[in-house]
Length: 295
Image (tube, rainbow, N blue to C red; front, side):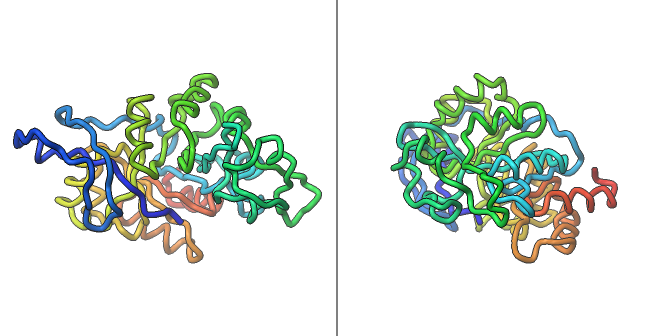
């Protein structure tokens, strides 16, 4: 499940009104306390996402982990085999500054070890074995470099930016020539400002605010926060919201994964006009979309 996130506001209404002071701390209805701000630079033009390969975008949540442990190279490789458009990864930083993919802040749930990622050296993390029904597989927590090497020119990467340095992540993206093959989901206000500084053209994704319930609300949200892609729960969206976001060239690719995910969820998402969805069942969703003529 996605967490409630902090966003970086662009206080358009105040700046257009000529007010000279922009506060650095706000409370936005429906959201957590919002910190930081960005300068208004005229009409916002969203950064384009990686060139779409299909009519309907399928994002494999933590890879295809139906038969593989989540966030492993095996799960990512299966998502590639499925022909998913994106693999979602969770980027964290080790004690010695190396980037890995793991959803939780500790290794406890996924491995035979214990401890916080931020307190462990990469060498020690690599000694741990991923918990799996097939204990002979000997899977380990992947590094960002391993993921880039696997995914380059095969599948786009949706980076859930948990705890990492944007400059370090972007340096590796440039090293692998993959700057145009990723988008970044923002969790904290400083991440937004850092990414806009380090890589101004990087497409950044934000979760839709709970109070953006109509076309006016979503347009206000986009104009204020400047997302390039929208996330959130698919149930937040309706045809009006999707059409309004599309009119501003901001795609909405929300979360469809849940214990009840299946054809009913997918039909509802399609009926709302959504053109992308994050899923725990990428292969099944892709096959269903093919039946619907959407792949």
